[in-house]
Image (cartoon, rainbow, N blue to C red; front, side, top):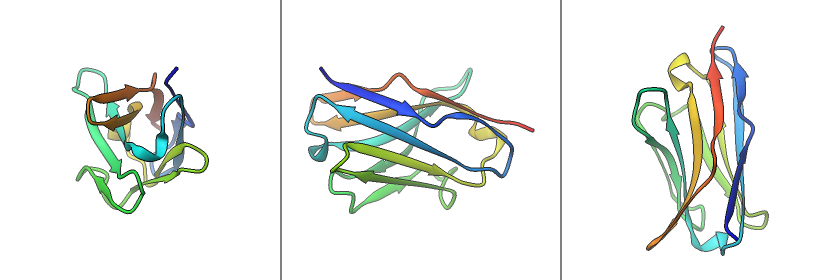
Length: 116
């Protein structure tokens, strides 16, 4: 069955870095657009970063542009989110999402907390 397994979350100080990973299985990963979303307490889920199936194109929310980098390794069925210069407002549960037409898959999420 389809699985998206996020990892790499944790507690980090402001200005620090984390690298999230999302390992996919059960579908043709290389055919899917991959996204990272996040949801903070009391807020709606928001799109953070997106990458096309080939990895040639990426997009970012204005709030993370220049600090976060999305990448993927289709040989490993894995998408990454490198997060640098983290701020307290980046605190949220981060979700991996795979999308292709009517197919839309979600991971369970990983908590990222930025605090001193």
